[in-house]
Amino acid sequence: MFEKVLILTDFSEHARLILHCITDIHGIREIVLVHVIEDIRAPMGKETIETFVTGTAENSLQIEKDYLETLCPNIKVTPILTTSSDIAETILDIAEKNGIDLIIISAYGVGIKTGMLTGNVSTAILCHISRINVLVMRYKIIEILNGKTYEKFCPMIFSRILCPTDFSQYSERAIALAGTMKGVGEIILLHIVSPNETGSEVKEVSRTAEIQLRAIGDTLTAKGIRSRVIIKIGDPASEIAATAEEDDVSVIWISSYGKGCLHDFLLGSTVNDVVMNTKRPVIIIRALD
Image (cartoon, rainbow, N blue to C red):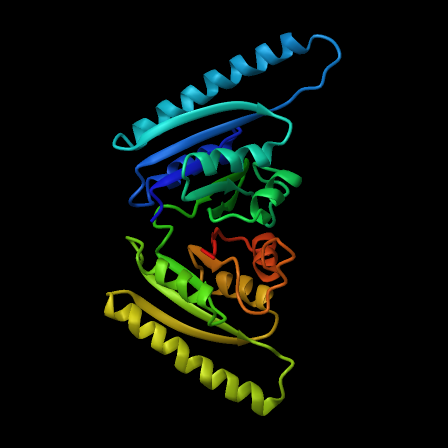
């Protein structure tokens, strides 16, 4: 499914961790390794600054390319270095032109503001209307005596996948795609019931949802994939994040569109809230139509 992957790098520790994770995603044929230098608006010495920055970036990008080729000798690695005043738009343009299936963004802890891409860049990539899937990668943080160290969720990023669903065609498609990934250990099917219903309505909706979830689970079982069903009542984004922690999932796999989402030409509001508040990696599966 993810044959051509675009990795954004700023040559940081978090970016380097992404390179390790790539080896655990089966089926990749090509990795496009991208670094975008922000256009410098300096009144004096601009050319000298640009020459130094570009030279340093070229060297760092080559080092990461060589490292990737050591990790993945059978995968083609294409480095791209460019300068732009609109980093997010440039990244998306590169992804479109190269037929990318998955863009990977590194993020640290909760939210994305302290990740590799900050502020408007990350928001623009996540919220852009696009058919390109996005993986927001996070890492477990372990406290040690001398400071913090990072434990990647890889290997086995697909060992326990949390698939929230509202039973829309988009959610169903996302779950079906999750079932095609190699290395899937278990898929947890989650449906959130609105707390605004009356007591009897909540029971009826929950009962109906359980029947639907078990039917989806039977389909996965037929493919040799273990599954579990969870139904919760409450705010979708909060319950998704809570379930991800409670069940120690390796990744949240979620569709970017579904029933009731406030699109506003951006991500569905629930998806956006999940990405911003979870501590787990999130794969956002884009709608085809």
